[in-house]
Image 1: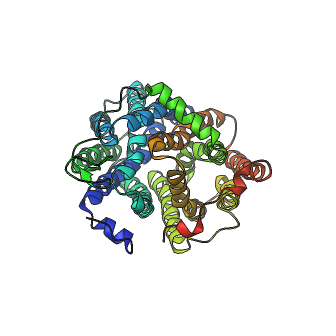
Image 2: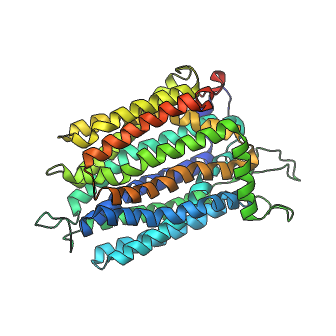
Image 3: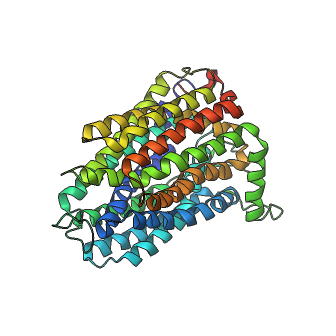
Length: 453
């Protein structure tokens, strides 16, 4: 099917190849939200210790951080579909095992450590493969519309998933002890086990949908197909003259470093991941557990509110494609400074609705920028480097942020939750101000006429 340029989103949704990919991605993303809620809650109920929670997140993030750039290079050298398929089978096995151990009541802390390490290693390859798939499935002329649909679905799962996961865990058993200490031997944790099981099931079903996806042919085929036609066979193996994997990683990093605007953006996003995204991994479950009589349901509600705000921001961005405060970079800095201000009072809220309101606003501002920034990177980077560019981008938010979370777990031994939120929010405001004064980030811009509508 040749997508109509007049109705790109409608044409994409009529493309069965795109639908197979998006449906599988949606299932995986929805399942991931169940683990996102269940894992930190499980650790807190087992130990009640933020340092242990930080250690678990570090065990997931360290192998992901170490290998995600290698995963991006492998994706560029081989088929992203092949890499992604193998990681889905690995996650199916790991999460299925974790679910079975929780339901059987046989899970111990060392098992949580080992499985977290293995899951982190698998995601080091699944993240760059998944983010690099889209340019191999739809023509480049449809990339902006496809990004809008894919990221919209992602945010929908980030809204619904945490709410469903929190409700499931609260209804079927969240592992809370009767004495309310949240430490030591857990009580009924059936809800947590089911949550991991549903995530494992999502990987199994999405592996089947991925098998239906046909990649675009990279070069004209002998039968007369031109670039943009579909092919059921994977791309040809790389030429023997292509650089080794580690050299390929270095080549990609050197290219990104030479691009002044791209280098500035990557460094700035690293600061955001360390100051905001990392602490959120620890602070949000601890905040939810401090709200009386709500527990896991409150955790899911707060995370879901952020997802709902992000989805609304993406919709607003599509409806107002030319809305900017000066350049794209200026708008990004202004929004991030506002997010920092909203983040600061999170530690002193006394009711769930206050946290929901703040998370909705934070998500709204962040979501407004996401599709545009993601597409800006894909269009700025040469096609041969897309896998490595997406790997570096995801390394920042999926590698650095959890490492920051691990450090946060240790820091919270000496400071209060209110102090953590205030310090992180103030730091983000300061970083945005320094980036405005000292870097070319405020000059970064896209072309308003090419923004998706």
